[in-house]
Image 1: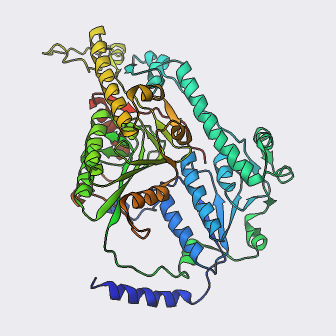
Image 2 (image 1 turned 120 degrees about the vertical axis):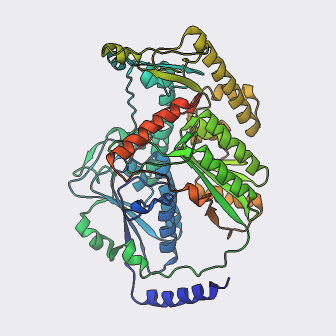
Image 3 (image 1 turned 120 degrees about the horizontal axis):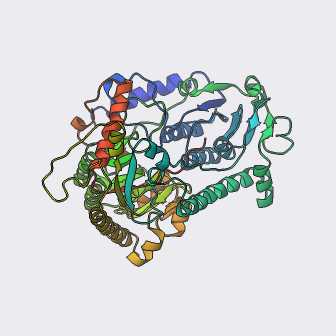
Length: 556
């Protein structure tokens, strides 16, 4: 309050300074890396000088600023393949549509188009291609690698029990080929994603279903036919873009120096708290790799959402009287059942005091769906992967490796089942019965939790559970989610449920400061190797897993 006059004076002086000179008429954004939905959490001091990823929410803030400035005509999107999921591309497409509604023109340009970049380009006013460029084959495909026979050559096997064949997270380790259930599941998921692509192309290129199918099936396209086939609008080199647009082009940094910022406001009153659950759900504290490995490693190499961290953040929000509602952002394939349950119970306490609106990211399945059940309302993108309501448990058996190496391991144990989790041998018939009983018990509890949350009966949930994975649009039809949208839709619903004004801000709850800096070695190769080995240990300690299979979704 005391500092507000000084903040306002600084804004006034800055606005006058920024009004001198003109920003570029088109602002160019080069999208060349996977953008997270939310900004990355604060990093350790030694990592703060490395380049920071631009998030979708930060891109939206920049688009909003451009939309308010009458001197700027529009935005030029320079598109490169980035590995973004369809759900993330839908986030960006929504931002483009919002910017266009503000009266700005959005133009897409690329040296070549993939399925993902072409999908995003279809949200723009104009699609441009570099001379000599191509539109690569459009469509979706999924390839599974099944390791059981190969692992057996090294004396390694996997012994897992699934609640149903659809709960296929362990299939790559336990099978030599794709099961009928996994094939069926991948087919309906890819079909749903393909329909999203067809809808976007049909709207952008003004084609009926037959025309869209022909455009996709006749790809790839070289530059000599791409305009004639109405796939892109024009061939333009990057050097000729300013001539084509008849406007000046500049970077965001250059434009931002000439744009007036919104006037500062007093930050009093109630707000909407943001809680995030991102990465593999683990027992312990949240963490992330000190440096990204050269290849993505599912589960053990992902970010970790630790129950000790999330539970304390939830308790903090529950006790904060100014936090009138909560947006819970979930981007997780699941993980430990015990950690998921700890988070769910803490969030249930929050939900008893203030409404929770869940916003699902690219993936929110299995344990990631479990933690969403305390929500009063669930929002997902059409291509979000969700569901996978089910449980599996098991272990990797490495005893054969030691036998092949002629290493002899001998164990002394007290307790009938003390060695049940040992990696030396598969489960006995009795141990398999014990584990199956545990999994069935956890699954029944999972069904009851979902049934209560979705106002259904367990018998109604069971046919759409069993570990089956759905897209957000399919989940809406199955009553597993309530609305299609992103963070903005979730925030609007949270304000409505809490009776807040549209000006109520969204503010992230980060929890106690002492929990943020992990005791991690400097960013070196052993750092990420150690992180993944630790992840294997944490997962092996979990009594059972509510984890979703590693399904395809990255496109751009």
